[in-house]
Length: 418
Image (cartoon, rainbow, N blue to C red; front, side):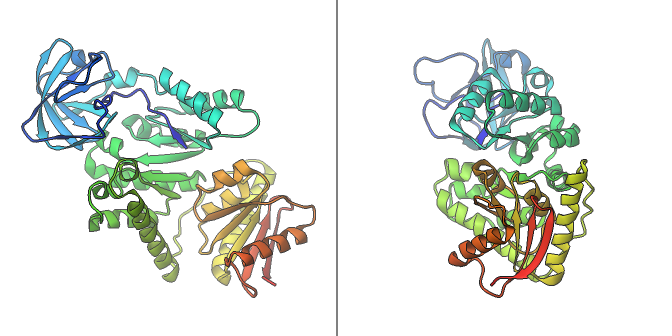
């Protein structure tokens, strides 16, 4: 997955430093000037040329969603002098927002394009390098997603690249359903989102996004500050563990680390903690047999897709009722595997596809363990080959009860592993 930078206002690099610490009461300069030599002490470059014109004295400047806060105290030409009022760690290219009289100043951001000229160059690079997903920052409408999809289709005819909408602004929330319908998935980018809406609204916004993605059969990633303390410390706070647990209980498809792995001191340990907590909560969910009663509306239009949807709904109910050990799904496009994942059955879902790109994309979806397999015309042969493959890996054993689905035969079977 590659992530576009977006056109929002942000800081530049910190003169080559990985981070900088802003202390309470310090005076920092935010400047639109270009510096050929190393940055002067306590000086930060801003990417937006109109920054000094737009801010006013007494405005509050938030860095990276409020991780550091400044008050504007003076404007001198292209330079803005700011007093640090809430200390913290400054990271390169962090997002900047400014507030006036308790309200977010967003008129300028609203006029900036969602995908910048630099983003288009990065997207071309990602296409050439064979990325599976492109995450679009600060999506304002479905039009942006549709434009990017058309652009990708014209330049990448031999495979599909999924477009993920990052929900991290007020505009994203206002047009949430149309954005999610147009995209191939969504990311709850809580850090930047928390800079644009009151902090106490972030949990309910996350729950709304996760639920809507599930209903519309779009994978959803919960990201930002999951284990933020592990940037500096080897263990997370108990509150962070509870936060991770809540995202798992909401049945999000994926959880994503950011600063913890990008520049933290304990990246591998952070990943181990994230995985262990997620596995424990999922196991607890199955042990307690907490089958949630979320209403899943019909999402397909063609008759063939409606059949697949009903097969997957029935298979998930059968899996939970019979207590099967696994569900096998044989799919060319990945669509049936995606529909089954949407139902969140209590057992592992092994997805088999002949496409490498489909296999890689299915890794993002809840509960799916994808494999690439060259299909034969004989379904019995496909079953036996996959039984042998998974038995050799210790993932199933003889006598296990499994359900097998196929979008090639539009069929459902219940059987024991020989």
